[in-house]
Image (cartoon, rainbow, N blue to C red; front, side, top):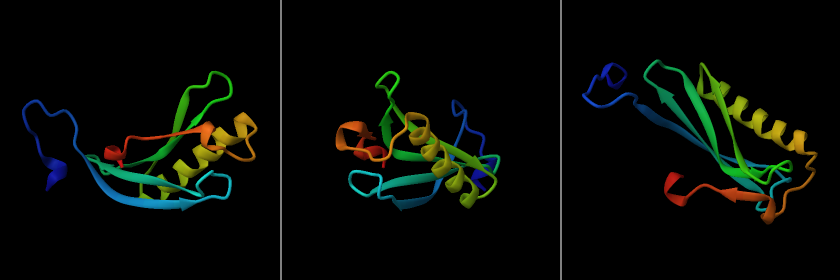
Length: 106
């Protein structure tokens, strides 16, 4: 099984196990994608394809999340995204407020 692979010069292997399209009216194009990866320990992590340019320094920040299941990682990722919006007092994002990941990453 891939979880047990040990290969020279490889320190970590992750498997893309799910991709979700999340629809939120606050987003300028109404949706974003979240990818969920499983690591060799069987834990899951999520990441958004959309990054919010933070109010305090203008740097783009994407949401990440973790969990013991795909669903937990998805929920944790969405909750972190909502926390970013809450911290910045955002009620609606414009295209100037966001940055997308490279198309090849998603």
